[in-house]
Length: 166
Image (cartoon, rainbow, N blue to C red; front, side, top):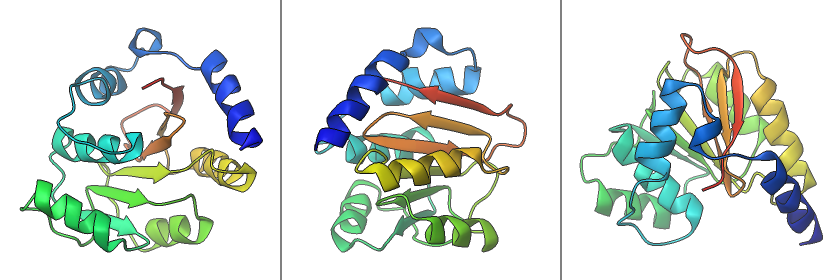
């Protein structure tokens, strides 16, 4: 608990809102998705997940590890959803190097896939995993929202890292 509190204080001092973002892709993601009105209930990460599905028109989704309750929530909100790869959106419950490696090696993603990772500041190990994921050569953009993080693999995007308060 103390780790999360100290991490949050550091996050607050180093993060920004949409005004500190110069990437049109990320600016639109922040203003139209993350800061957009939410009709969804639940934790910030779940609201971010559901809003991202809407914003990116994600149809093919992966949930790692499989979580029946979350999958059912997604199915209820988005009946057209298919749970297969390659995925438009991949949700990872906690940072896990093994799952991340499987995603990259198994080609379960494409250029426009968003990888949403929960609990990136859950403990020191999670934060270290998150930092390692951000540095991977195939990751071009990361968005740290404290409660969760988003990774993008867009080849046309310059490598950038953002800390955004939501």
